[in-house]
Length: 295
Image (cartoon, rainbow, N blue to C red; front, side, top):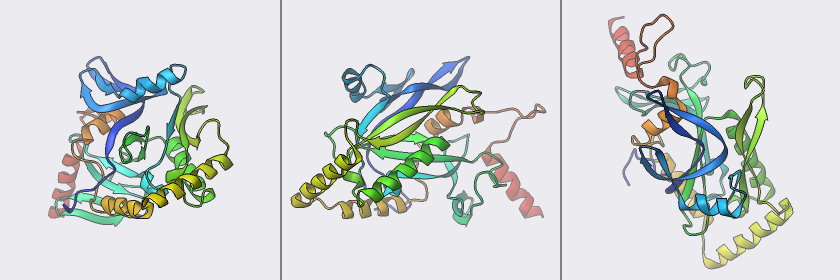
């Protein structure tokens, strides 16, 4: 296995809430009040729809506000990976990834392990660090290990998903991968949103089932899998080792799409209030190195 290369769950599609649109020559994210399932292929108009998107819409009322899903792993932290991320806006590559205690930072001498004060207190990031999460789920039964990935910087989504995963893991006796679950889009208004609705993702028991019924189904499926020789513990351990094999989860080819969707105001040469252009992260790093070498 190649060292330094994170082995992540196979992705067959994306889950998004909205799309990227072009306005006045700029590509900007546009929020929506429904889920969209896309493939991993993109053209000039955006990401191409996944065939499951139309199939699920035909089963409902047109708008996808819920998605029937299963999880790949029993360990909550393998399904949802959330951390603080600082991306180089010029290349889209991750520069620093931390959890509020420690971080892995890319520099001229390679990857360093350093203390992480969190996004609000980090002088290195200068306010450019954001919480960022990846949530892998299974949709449909055609591919047992293929997943759709939901990427988000929403505090509401990250906090809600993390809590639900821990709770369902506890009440089911650790059978997360066997529970029939559902992603549901919820709306809320806050003073920061000026009373306009904002949407976040929740994780609930599959529609039409009680929690007790879902747990009973999870135990039944777990027994069937064990009888067939399915080793869930080994699968979780393989994933754990794969994530640990690399310093950063995102590939170089994923970076530009991440920056375009979540950091549109940081792309290109953004002006400071006084009219001077902001330096890219690479430029700030070089400046800091130069100061340190002459000081």
